Amino acid sequence: MRVAQVLLTALMASTLVTAPVQAAVRPETPPEVYGGAWPSGHVQGIAVDQKKGYMYFSFTNLLVKTDLEGRPVGSVTGFTGHLGDLDFNSRDGRVYGSLEYKDAKAFYIAIFDVDRITSLDMNAEGSDVVSAVYLKEVVDDYSADMDGDGVFDGDTAKTADHRYGCSGIDGVSFGPEFGRRHGKQKLTVAYGIYANADRQDNDYQVLLQYDIDNWRRYERPLSQAESHTSGPGRVDGKYFVRTGNTTYGVQNLAYDGYTGNWFMAVYKGVKPRFPNYSFFVVDGSRPAVRGPVEGQRQPEQGELLSLLHKGLHDAASDVWGWEFGGQYGLASLGDGRYYVTKQGTTVEDGVTKQTATSELYRWTGRTPAPFERVQ
Image (cartoon, rainbow, N blue to C red; front, top):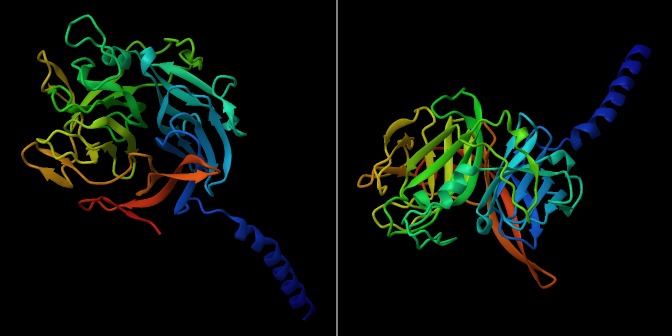
């Protein structure tokens, strides 16, 4: 009897000790993460660190770090350019994002040492949180004098300049070499593309791949008054995906380890001869094929990628796609679940602020939308 009482007492003590710990465990993937309200530009992209339990939001001119319960942990402010899509690099624990300074003809990958983001309003230039790598290939295409008049027409869609209609960069994602599901991990950067229905050379999404193993030699502190040009002199791959012209190209790019494919969320295009879908999927199982890049002023060959032959199909243009969101933030969790971000606005004390809410979805592959909410 006394032994039984001792055992019962020990069991009750164990329960009392372990129960509060179990109750305090935070769900790894909550159905919704709120990014807060900020006096900024609208949300551009997100990145997720599942292991440490953080989400990162780009709000055009600042980066916000929250935990997965939506509580702000820190922010990086002071960007005078356009901070776009983000992705988390699990290999080095840092966040990478596209960063544009169109007036200066300077395009970078901004690299955030996110472990150092521990308070609000950390300055992008006054701390060691942000470094930047210059992308010469993007600069060359953006500033190309395509009509040969010797004049760069600047940041405008109504021009013959800008090779492939390049407006800069936006979508970024880590993933394997195209066509090799278990290939070497590289950083893929998507061009922004101006919407222009009068051109024939802007119907492709352009994707650059970089091997970043030795990129630390290029990294420089961010100096927005004096643009640096430290970066790789060439790309490790330049690829073309024919979708029809879109409005500012791939807004959010995400490699999905669950399907082995690449997701591209876009603002719809304006050309009537294309279906102008809002969501495209690159078939990750098919390697690039050398072929003609159609519509160029001079005949050109390039590395062509294939859209996944599922979803909606426009027979006239032979373009496949879906109708879905993701333009404001899209992150794959690698197991068939994804965070998709919606943007909004709110007014606080007379000030209009931008908001972001990332909602959990799962892949279905159905048409017209290939995802469904996880409640």
